[in-house]
Every structure is written in C-alpha cells, then in structure tokens.
Image (cartoon, rainbow, N blue to C red):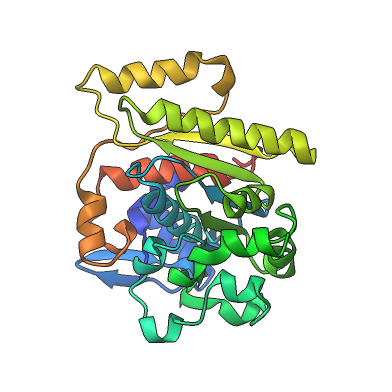
Length: 312
C-alpha cells in the first residue's frame, strides 16, 4: 500500500500556488514522487511539511448494524490522517478481520498476531504490531479473537482496563490509534469504548439505521456514567444520496434530535462505487493518482475528526 498526498491537494489546502509549494518543498528538502504525470508526497514528507500539533487520541469505530461502512471508513480516515503527517496504528478487534484484509499482507506472518494473544499474555503488545507502510502500523485480527468475550468473562477481566492498559504502553508512539470493532455490544466492544477518547458511528440512511445508532450511543452514554468517563461520540452519515427523500430526512432527523445534538459530523460520504473498486484491487482510495470526489469527502471528515480545534 502506498498512500499519496497529491501536490494539487496540498496547494489547495495551504492556499498557495503549486509553484510556491514546490519552492517550499525544495527548501525543506522533501522528496516528491511522480506517477501518471501527477506529483505527490507520502507520510514522511507530510510530517515535515505540515507540522500539525496533533492531540493524541484513540478513536474507535463502532456500530451494531452491519453494512454501514464501518471498516471502510476507519481504514480511509486513518490512511488520510497519516497523509497529514500523523503516525497511525490500526487495531482490528473484529474476528472477521476485514480491516486486516484491506492491507493485503502475508497471512502466514499474521497467523499468531492479534490482540487475543496479548490479553492471554502469550505476547506483549509490541510483539503483535505489524508495519504496513510509512506512517501506518497494524495490530491484525483473525478468528482467534472470537473467544475474547468469553475470555474476558471467564477471567473476570475489568473491561475498563483490559485494552486500555495495553494501549497505554504504546500510545506515546502514535498520534492516533484507530480501533475497528465488531458490529455488536459486548464486553470486548465496551473495553474498546472505555479505552477511547472518541467513538465514531457510521450511519446509512435507511429504515433500521437509526435504531442501531441509538443503541450504540446509549451504550457509550451508559459507560460514561458508570465509569465516570467523558468519551466523545460522533456520527458520520455514509452513502448519502441527495437525490432521494430519505437521505436529507435522516440528516435533519439527527440534527434535530436532542440526544445527538452536536454529534453529527458536518460533512458526509456520498454514494459511490470507489470504495468497492479499491477493495477489489486491495488498495486505499488514496493510493490512486486520480482521486475522486469521495476522497474529498473523506478528507473533510478526517480534518474535522483529527485537527486540533485551534488549528488554522
């Protein structure tokens, strides 16, 4: 995987001409690569160029409803964050291992690397981290994670500590840790919530989406009260189609719902086939040199989630 931050996007973001940008890049000796007649930089160059003072966060992607794009958005947002110079760790705790599969790694090298092996004390958390590309590491998942809920219950492990104490050991190495959770409410997911600074729930505008969203939001609210936490909660509207009545109606419904007041990300993801195309080719949408409108959607959401509040 080779994510790219296009020179044209950088110039637009910095509000300068491409000529002036190339001058800055030259002064700072940032390596520029070229493919299909388009110039780009990667994580290393972005870190030097942007110098963004990120606030370190653990962000978990959760929902109790499948098919809403949870894993896809986790992968895309985390990848885009790395292209702003953020050091990113993905933690896959879903036994289906869909996030792990997006990175097209050698399965044999991953067979014993998962968070279950850390919780049962077979390995340290450092032992199960796999480098993916510049700026991105991964703790993979596999079917062995299916027993984690049972392990937590049998061993009576404290859900507010079981993941958090492990992540605290490595948190200083990363700007952001993105956790991809299984679509359920369970001890493992609760542990992921309690180790997070922010929980993100994707929502597709359909009949049953709101029910799942409310369940997830109430679970976060309940854990905050029980454990005296202040975990933030955000909603991303995915597969938004402005040509339909339902998409704008759901958007307005969330905005007007007092329970979700201030929780809806202002940008949304339009209906697209680009995620499916990238998945088939086992790449990120940001690996292509011709980046489409969905890349702009993800970029806007990424900035809203990861940029410091006072960043200009």
